Length: 291
Image (cartoon, rainbow, N blue to C red; front, side, top):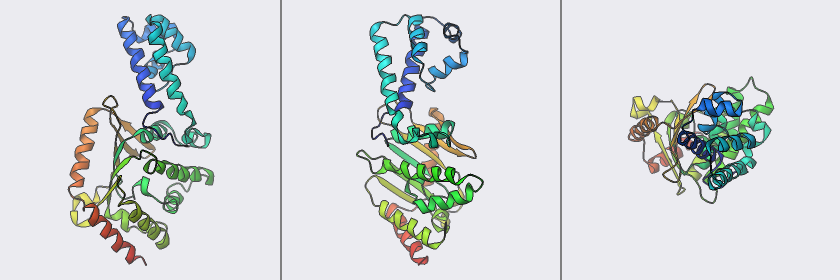
């Protein structure tokens, strides 16, 4: 199931890591000192402080004792960990998804589910959150032909489950760009592509969705097929994140400079796109051509 709230484990990990780092610094200790107490490498301590993992119960108790944390601080950090772990029942925690996705590609599920607003340029593909099952199946059949049928099916199902964030109680706001090529490529055959285009016509007018197409007539911007996504979260304490698609999966960045650069690129590309209404009209024209 999808956690239909805008907080989750990845932010709890980050909060706990920052708390522990602050306690260590205030105690005048180094990561090497903490690693020695835990009998682990400094990398393990760094991983915890960077919000990449929760400490075990034993590690947490040892660190808090080393840092001289009082009862109130101990209770606060423990509550954050328990709160974060409660999201382990999300659909992506199932073994078949954990076995398929790794690293940032897996963490992206948490990030996307927590987002309040998503700005995506999907390049030569229909935006992932607006893809139909048969469209995704056609992509997987070509791009993952060396994988087993089970892994392809897990990929397709994960794409379908991710789309729940558009229709949940507090839906994400989606601002999507794609190239005209994405809408004209007859992926999966005419029937599949017509179904995909009609699906876009269903979602494009919705209040939380903005879909704009960059036409061939835009020139150079119309061949900018490098996809990227900017994800924004509620509250000023949560940093925005940029996701880029690489050959081996997603790559996440939360450096403010990277986020600013991605926002500028998205704004620049938007300037060459058709308006939402013009995009709907163009989709209708393309769908008619496929009849």
